[in-house]
Length: 212
View: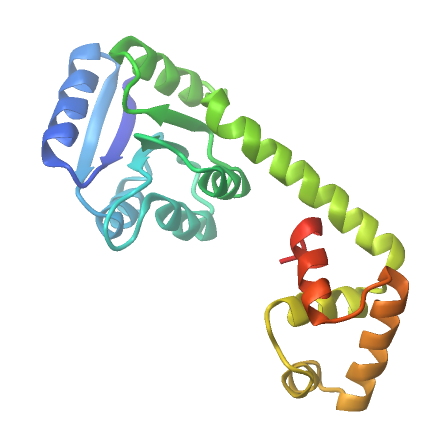
């Protein structure tokens, strides 16, 4: 049985070339070609293909936004992102969304087909250069969060995040449904436990520990 694929890219020439490559391979069926993220979401909902191959950078709804929407639906379609380059932030987000494959547009056609077949079979294909830094970031954030949890209560960690986001005491009190006095007490405890002096240092701490 052919591997059913939805492909999405906002460059028609590349989209046509990819569709032709998959057709010539013999074991793929392109069930729909999409030129926008919105079209890709509708196509996956309509066809529930085996694979979605989607460009990361598209105007409007980009590839990661597409995957965010599809994750909510819980469909069995496995996803592969297609990109000319991938930033560390995009790689971290892709990992969070459970992407099974990452294809660079510079890849040889045989490697592209090999990637799709491996992902369809239940495996994973990632481009090491993009994901090495992302994995280090995820691990660093995890270690930072664990360290913060050793020192601070859950409420204090929540307050650190809100301070780091630039919220003032009154705003924090309103969102947490506590008094400003209680916010100040929590903040004094945070300063003492972390040996910090001000809100700027709290934000720096949150960034370093991956709490934002």
